Image (cartoon, rainbow, N blue to C red; front, side):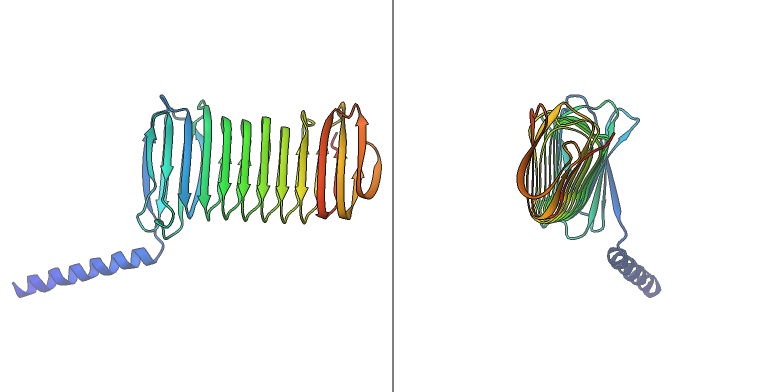
Length: 277
């Protein structure tokens, strides 16, 4: 009996030791949840110390995979027509990761992703209205198609490749560059510390603005019917290939009909408008 008791005690000690070692070694636990798209027309994600990824897959349902190092997972459920995933601030003590896989045919009226201290990486998102916010982390979009878009990063760069935004868009970064390629019908971009770089496959359709407190502004776009450039650079050269203007300071140039107004303002950095075809 004594030998049996000793063996059981040793087993309990070993299990306790293994449990502590697993927690300290950073081994992740995983949770998978499957949701039907029927009746769901929006997605809202609000997490803390978590990276968020959105990808397409070839199934009909929405798959949510959460990875955690301390066993704390986001609460995910459908509320009305919205799929919600959230972790309360301060509850998650270690870094986690949330991956969301949506069907190729899934079109959402609204996508909202907000994370504190984590990156956001979305690919081939298809929706009407999209809002992405990271308090401390990078935001990346790839081949997304939206009508309205709002992207905000407090500390981290913003990059959008092959983006199609058919209506209004807004990008803001407190500390980090903003780089966008694709189609922007209209946009307002601001950075406190970081450059702005736009490579458009179509010209702006409506008045747009770019503002950087400390950083260069570079815009390239194809031939178009005309625009009015209103520029201001306290310390930096201004060049406009469409009007062949080269100068400094503040001023205004008009190309062809001057119908679309483009504002470019930077305190410290050059402003460059180029043709890309």
